[in-house]
Amino acid sequence: MPGIIAAGGAAAALFASALSVQSAPVVEETPSVTAEVEVVTVNGSGCPSGTARVDVASDNASFSVTYSDYIAQVGLGGEPIDFRKNCQLSLQIDVPSGYTYAVLGLEHRGYTFLKKGATGLQRTEYYFQGDSDGVVHSRSFTGPYQGSWRTTDSDSDDVLWAPCGDERNLNINTELRVNGGSSDNTTSPSFLAMRSSGLPDAAYQIAYKKC
Image (tube, rainbow, N blue to C red):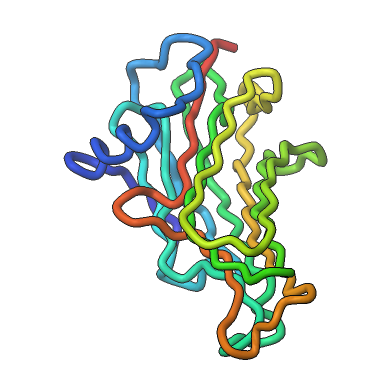
């Protein structure tokens, strides 16, 4: 169901800590009036109903996503369609009058186990409803690979601003993909998961500017 979800207290502090290592610069001073983020839809094979939570930080400048069942895999225990998983969030972000916003910093965390010969891909695309142009970020993994991973991007030269005075949903589509290649996955699978311990799995910094 659509709903406005906000993080407070310990959750907000934890999220702020997660972004402190590499946060994107804010183009102009964040408006003092809190923006509202409405979760319109959450769809995809990587985020079945009830398995994705969206939290807005109390500082009005970021939001995070936590997943509980977002894993792509090939080999033992998996179905043929499990090699690719995706999740699309559709968000309505209401900013104070006279301001617009952009996603200026991205961070994703997860865990990967790839056997020799297997490969993986984590991809993120975000765009505004009705626009054909979007921004894409991706990272490739090559087996053998085992361990936690973290990807960040805060390229201020590659910014997509919401149209001033025009309400458009922000769509964020993430994807995980595993290719077994020449690996032997008959005894255990190769997998790529959007999952971390104690921190958000995905974090997005919001920058504001006056129209």
